Amino acid sequence: MMRLFFMMLFSSAVYAGGSIYDIPLQWTDENSQAFDLKQCSGKLTLVTMVYTRCQTQCPLLIGKMKSIQKLLKQEEKKVEFIVITMDPVTDTPQKLKDYKEWQKVDFPNWHFLRGDEKDTRKISVLLDIRYQKEEESGHFMHDNKVVLLDKRGTISYVLNGLDADPKPLVNAITKKKSFLEAFRHFFSPQE
Amino acid sequence: MTIHWFRYLVFFPILSNLFFLFPLFSESLVLIKGGKLAPLYGLPEGKTFINVSDFYIDPYPVTNELFFEFVKKKTDFQKKKISKLYADCEYLKHWDPYPLEKQMKSPVVYVSWFAADEYCRSKGGRLPTIFEWEYVAQASETKKEGSKDERFLKKILEWYSKPTVAEMRAVGKEKPNFWGIYDLHGLIWEWTEDFNSVFVTSDNRQDKDQLKALFCGATGVGADRLNYAAFMRYALRNSLRGDYTLPNLGFRCAYSISGEKK
Image 1: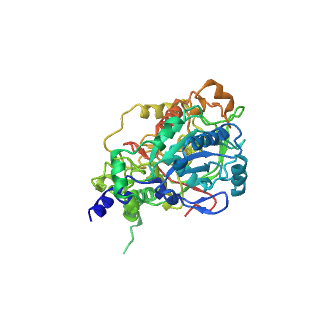
Image 2: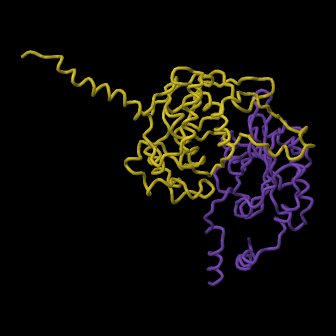
Image 3: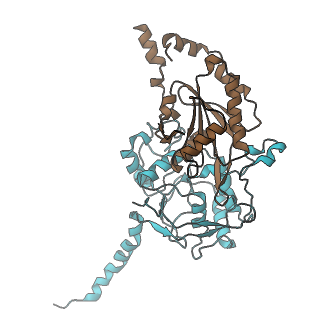
């Protein structure tokens, strides 16, 4: 009974701050399957925004994500890697699939997502990732951010800039549990 | 019995006033014919203008009354229920907890981008893009292109230099601009759909000099720097986040020609 009480007290269900995982946005992954961010709930998630025609910064951003993956130990690899295109008009699921293969990140926890233009803008506002399309060239000016979402779907760390050291973000993923988290984990070990 | 028709003239001022007030309470949209815009920012190198397509826009900013109707239906956007992701703690601060009668015809302020976006979606529209908003807002009372009109720019800057009033006046009390759009200047600042596409300060592509050559789609600043009012608007947009609410920041909706107009 006591255990149930503490589970209720500390479960994510009573969290009132709002979760990005719960925002009703429609995504399609590189396999043309519907993807719901809710399936990341309870996991740590790294999110970035790129577009496939971008030949310079975006591969570096993906490279940053890959280097983070390498720095994680085996047991910490339960992190979801989400790459959202800021160019849904051009980036079809097939293009995202090709891009994923080209980037050699063909892992099940890597998802390349495409939404409509409204949902893409909305997630960019939620993640505070700015972008602007230059209509004539079709290229984008954009932020280079990798955002870490915690298990509840709130932003817990932002790696800002191509030259930013990924170690603080890795530390944020691998950090030892705080007292409160350890307490929650004790009463709710399935989390 | 003789009909003294001229006696009916006493009704003329009343009827003409009703006619004048009619658009204020209707939700009629205004068609904006597209054209060229020389924005302050965001032009590719070598270009001096961009083309804006035709679109519809609300003639007035969204009022407290209309937004109140919206939150009555969309309860998760009510003051006490809205997610912290969607709005900061000042959301609809001027309501107590509902708008007062005297606030009804004033523009709604203390609204976040998410709330404004949801409102416009509920009407089958969207927020105007920066280019659309600037295109409409560059019109003076008489000219489609007023951004070279010093008197017009001076009037805008005079408003920008005044502090925000505690109580907003009702919408539609000043003269409309060339397009028949009211209160684009002089009452509130307005949200745009892509407010977060502004990079007035150096964005993080410019972290270090060695990265400068790596920019994708780098855009030049190729517009009229004399338009200081436009610069102030861009600076404000650059400073915003989607959950921010401000005492003088409201919105109006736009509608694409293809399928978004209700």
